[in-house]
Length: 610
Ligand code: G6P
Image (tube, rainbow, N blue to C red; front, side, top):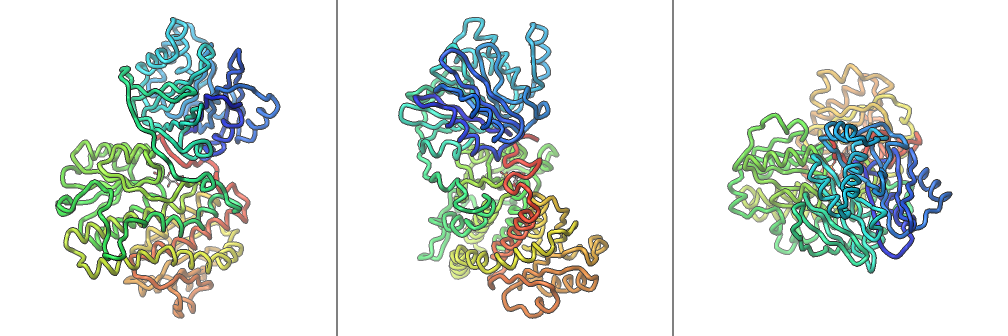
């Protein structure tokens, strides 16, 4: 789970590589490095810690050259250290790598026996040794990389530079992402789109088992067996400023406030207000396939798992199809009973989370149809799926997911409405009403963010010393309670638990005392009365109760210490609004504590390891 970049062209490449790495830092940030050909040899600079350490080293060394590669690391093999940082230079060959080489032990033994001096604990250095051995045996760089790849098992996105052929880079991909950017007389590669966005919008996505030779004039893609691949570039219309902070203190805060816009973009072209219907969605199913769906499995990890839990509620309630939601890492490998007639919905912001990818592949191999809900275009999960239904949230940089969560909810609700309608469970009037209400979401979210921001910041300030925080909710608010707790844990390092409010009596109530803030989600829905009962029970045990309730709810106001009001909406839409003050709460607690909000310790945005 690292980030890689590469450049070959006519410009000085050090600033371009550093800029790309800055945009990729969310993928890992325990060390970073560059390798640049200076006209005679490859100069490598590496630094432990955040990118600014590498920037300092580059500033001092001022490496010149117009072909280079760079890397930001999240350690998998070997602790974060300079010797384990990439690029790895062996002979004339420098390599950066994202992924895990599974047969690294056998390779290490073999290379050592053949006399190689291996400096680091990484699997990547072994790749550099392999390529170097083929180069020394007289192969050109492309042939050497191809020969080395045949000996590798596992996941990799690689970029390779050789001092013998400094006018080109060779890149390769299997399971880890790699994007090629085509400029005017210059060619780029990177782990994702935002890294390249300031330089070009014409991008080619490499597929698994492919490699490419990048030169100033463009890229030539081949399969491992040498057959040529013709692939048209795709034009990416994200603007570079979409990947910047736009005046906010942190990406996360910017992304929280971007949600109304992200929602608008995600709903656009999918809700047809004139016809009062959901358009045919890009989900790889037609109406007859919708009728044939026997069961739905939703697979995801992290925040996407909480979206998937909410999706189960949407699908069962509206489409009346049995739905199961599964943590992808638990689903895979336990021989789940899944197969023909099942629709598997894999939910993943990055589209690269390895557990979700493998779980979806297993289900597909058993005959299930797979629908991907992802944000990153052309990423691995949408590519392997039968249908890709993208959220249009734009790049999400903050490690803690916000705008991708709410847009995932939107896609899941649209799938549920579409299924329900095509299966005859929602008549035209009910569909029209839902479409109308969903279309108001951007506006309702904007109002909620504006009206709750200051109040939530004040509450967060008051409770930012709390050591434990409880989040309670029922029905569609239960996954939101889990998400509120996860957000707080991720970025403020405060211990937090999300619970189904009905479970409170079965354990968590023992935790409650005057020092514990309890955030209770109690919008006016079918569960309202019972949840209000839980709120009173918490209050009776002297908890500090913060209610997230429907505007004008005097009963909730009377029994809580603080009341955060959301607009009155139908039950299916409450999760889109109740989650907003919880995101803000986590953000402000973390900001008061002074933690690294956008890059919290030990976490990474994209988890491509098991
Ligand atoms: C990591 C991120 C989370 C994310 C999870 C799943 O843990 O820090 O924010 O929810 O991965 O990622 P995905 O890309 O599959 O949604």
